[in-house]
Length: 443
Image 1 (spheres, helix red, strand yellow):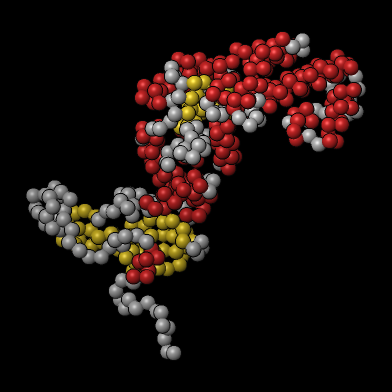
Image 2 (cartoon, rainbow, N blue to C red):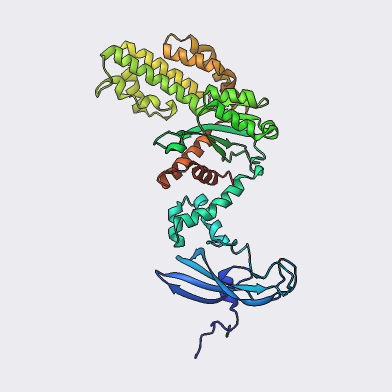
């Protein structure tokens, strides 16, 4: 055999196989070469054809070419440079204001862009799906951090300004998180402003009944006023669609919901309710420890030895762990307060672990009737607090288990990306990045 059977048979014309690999409609490959540290440079041009002047529509004549370098998406593990030999045209109409013009194709690259359109969207998907940092993306593209961010930032801003992303929200969650740990001075004097941001999350269930948490916005501050102002800014149509609003036991958010979401049912988050019960057990254990021994827990102290067991669910305890608890209860008669507090916390927790919401509501109502009469002050205090949140506490069982779990998961995703980026200096950039990874910009 004197020659390969599958060689390229372009013979000076365009190669369909190379064009297929390139994947840019309307552009044809005319050269490929390797440069630098393994990067590829692909030279492309559009095939000849008639072109009308954008000013007057008269058929234009060719006036040379202008090579425009672009950063393209990586290919086969290498950075790619696209050298687009743009055709320059001259208008034949003397009265036309347009003298010469370059060919443009927004599907390939925007005018004066440094990245191709597909490279920009590739970078966005890497950040959103693969948890990539901007620095990691620019390394794969073989360009600078600023080039990458200045290209994708306008695309994110366009998506962020689209009011349609707020459509269909019927369940709304709210929570706060800390976005920096440096100076809280105003940005104008060199600080980064408030540490806390309040995040609003779409917790609407899909057709299968599953919650697909989606970050809607991040606003400065941790207060009911910040939440109220955001709700007011969304408009009456958005507020009327919201039927359930989940929240932590924070009165500021509850006041904002009452003020702006007239038809929404406020629901207290199950995780934070159980957390309150666990905290009561810890508080009672520490108080009894101090009363008996006059110091904090130490190795060998019965109550100190079971401190972690007291935070576990009763159904998860092994026989050996149950024996350790029984031994600690019997070590001193004053330990009965800790035992009672632990059983109260387990009862509170059990209302979320019943076969149905009706059975869980029965236990929750028992908790509301009994806890506030308990002689143990910490348990009585919890009972009074739950009674002040009665409607919100019982709302979990009336709304099919609505909770703030998706909001907490979103906070975990935000923390992950804040660590990947090694922190942020610019709050606006931080907000755009988090809206992107939180699903708040694109479906």
